[in-house]
Length: 245
Image (cartoon, rainbow, N blue to C red; front, top):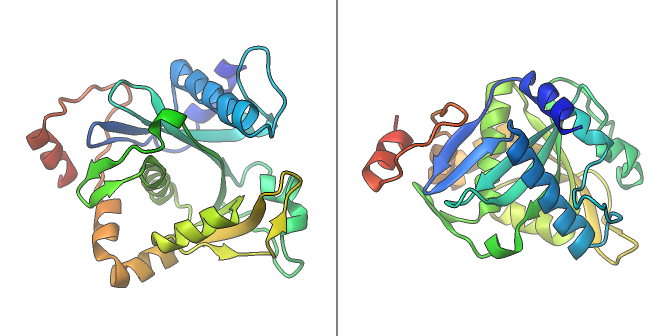
């Protein structure tokens, strides 16, 4: 199953692979990285949250993975620190299948090529306090992975992102400069979590932050692709040259 997913991922647009400090940010395109992501998802969504049933192989996979593009932030030991999945408009979105009741009746789900959905965000327990040194200060791996998603979206012409998350995560993302818009009322889930359906416009993100956080926009656009599998020297002077190339 892993191989079929990998084959589909390889056919999807351009790869993203770059360093932030000693952390590697990349779309997942090897079997080893893919299995790391499935194991982390099982650890979080099954073991910690109890949202999915246990799998004897200790991996979490669903039907959406067949058409998904996975992204990871890997620490200096090449362990998966955080993970996020992107679904393109060529397949179904979770927001229109599992979470359709959370979307307001006056919002029509976009299914154009410029629209995608992010889901399955998870951060390894040992990495939740990690702060990555960047050209724009220190950031959590969740912000770092959003830079990877932004980069992929810019390369592949994706402007809009759907997501379903906890209300408190929505508020935190907005506070950090990601202007998600609610497309329905908050809903209390069976486990007591208050969740929201939301939409992000990357052009609005750029417009607002060009005024309010110009250093954030500058940093999000500092990117130089690194061939998948390439190991770069990580000393400080080299990283500075990469960042401003």
